[in-house]
Amino acid sequence: MQPASDEITELLQAWSQGDPSAIGKLVPLVYDELHRLAKRYISDERPGHTLQTTALVNEAYLRLVDTSRAGWEGRTHFFGACSQVMRHILVDWARSRHALKRGGDVSVLDLNEAIAAAKQPGADLVAVDDALKALEAIDARKGQVVEMRFFGGLSVKETAEILKVSPETVQRDWKFAKSWLRRELTRRH
Image 1 (cartoon, helix red, strand yellow):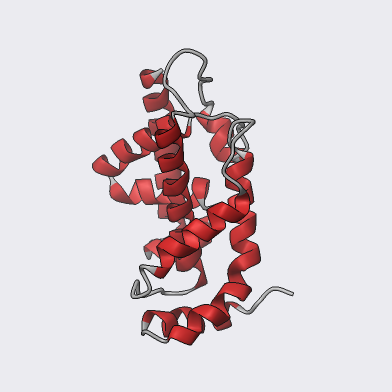
Image 2 (image 1 turned 120 degrees about the vertical axis):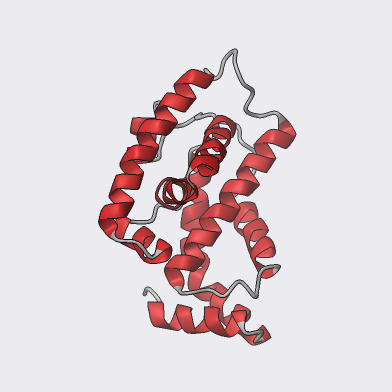
């Protein structure tokens, strides 16, 4: 049974206000969703990837505990932050182990397919992250839209809610960002 969004929001707010018992009540409610999100990330990695789903969830949890005063606005905001943290963990992991090297045998990411399905195995996560950072430098909101939709799997409506813009704005940003990132990734390879 899926926990009520209101219950998660109340616990997030209590956690943000310094209630130490809130995190203990929150984790069991959100763990399955975090595990599903982490599993999706791991499934997109190259074969032989050694970071396990549970390790990714645990590392994200440890990093989020350090941001307990984040001022969570609700379930969607929390899962958007979790997506961002997991993305950074995987990129850091890839960089530190040289798992995804530029050039040579790296396959070119078909961004249109990857963003639509988010299932492109072996995609060069480091190249995507670098391109996304370049986009964020030009337009931070468009970068946030990509992060929430592509990495977080959030809907247009959920993304609009977090960013406090209309769904139409998210759709326009999404369309522009996909095109810009496709061009940028093609240029880099």
